[in-house]
Length: 232
Image (cartoon, rainbow, N blue to C red; front, side, top):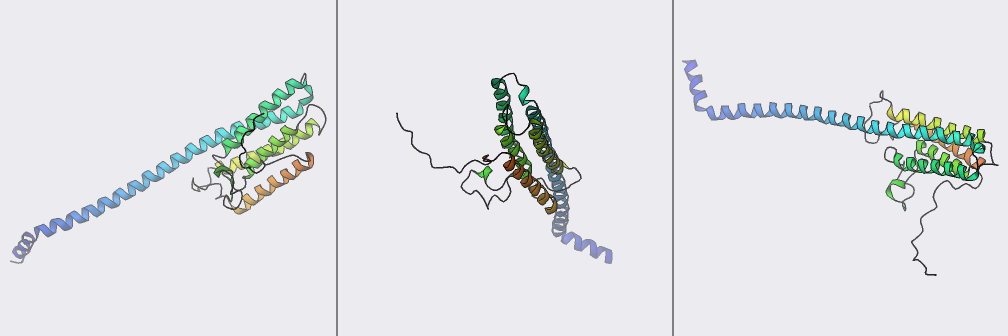
């Protein structure tokens, strides 16, 4: 009799029962879908990270190669057959360095962009990270390099090599696979100790540059309002 009552209750409430079962199935499906979505998002994030790391490594390889060539240019400056040959080699090196510095901004954005250089274009606000500082110091050194006179070629090359070592160290920290930090803001995510040490190292190299090359202009002068062209 009791069994008949149970069946009768189920028959009378079959609609409600179907609704409850459907709701439970929907919740389970939603949870499973959410877990799968999270997994897919993590996979896409890791793929994005690998893509960025690959591009960063390509940039780093080009930077290391250019810095090595810059050091060799300094060491062999007096061996160029004439001033024209030296100037051609120097100009090519400066072009490569300028390109690498701006391309590097895609991977190493400026620090504290809200605290400095508000009048500049977006990519140039704030302070350069140490890895790009080192590239700029080399650009300044090569720009001041002459075929004869000034610091010795070996002295200039040694300074460039010091800058290159900072670039390599910072690039390794940026790409270190043991660090599981997020893609966005990865550079700012470095430990404060490491970042402070890198900034101090870049500043030390900057002071060396200013001592070696008095009067060198490191940063671009502030932008002035455009003036109308004059007709002669």
